[in-house]
Image (cartoon, rainbow, N blue to C red):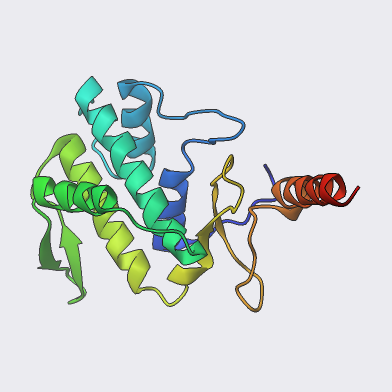
Length: 184
């Protein structure tokens, strides 16, 4: 949907990764190892000479859904132990280490190459995004069918849906119908 709010920088990359699956309307952008590879190359997370396999795709999707659930905590949802284990597993597998860049700033970088390293870069980006004061503005749509990650631009950080025009209106109509049946 064109009017969904997007973030910039590290928040934007995390949001883009989570939103590679539109749970409500489709499509699934990471539908095979080649589309995973292409997405990672396009985002500068993987060298174009490297390939991806079926197990890489499985791990990437598990990581994506763990990150989706962590973002959900900004909307009041619970983070499950399996999500924490998935994130920790990706960080460990990629050998994330603190490194200092030429600018003297510290950052996390994976020691592992390939897709495992790319997943580590995503976890490192998630870490950096969580350090951003705007992290809590990255939320999941309250529609259980949608769960799109969006950037809450409202002044009081109270937005609940990715768009009022679609999910918000659908939810309000559903609630109205439910109340009408109960009282009618």
